[in-house]
Length: 102
Figure 1 (cartoon, rainbow, N blue to C red):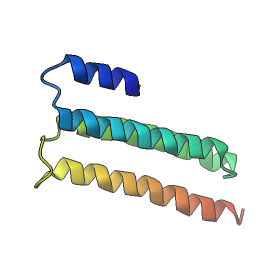
Figure 2 (cartoon, rainbow, N blue to C red; figure 1 turned 90 degrees about the vertical axis):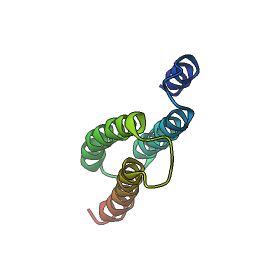
Figure 3 (cartoon, one colour; figure 1 turned 30 degrees about the vertical axis):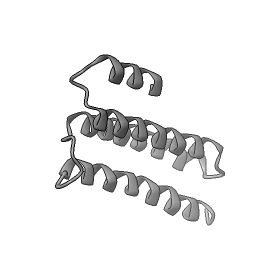
Figure 4 (cartoon, rainbow, N blue to C red; figure 1 turned 180 degrees about the vertical axis):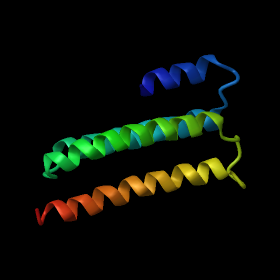
């Protein structure tokens, strides 16, 4: 997916470099979240539910990255994307601590 996004970023002139780099970062972060879910000792039920949630959040983050403005000042879509990434991180940490007690 990362390779495809990079190739499309190189080919299409309408795909701005800011959006291209943001989407590459989104792909990498979500890949790391999925790898962590796969190798962690979180209970399987939590992994299953979080995997579905993370897929939808990743798709949403990618779409936000496609349509956001190419500047970082006053960029509400970038703020929304960062909030969703921190929600993912918080869910992983919360579930990791909750899974320890179940």
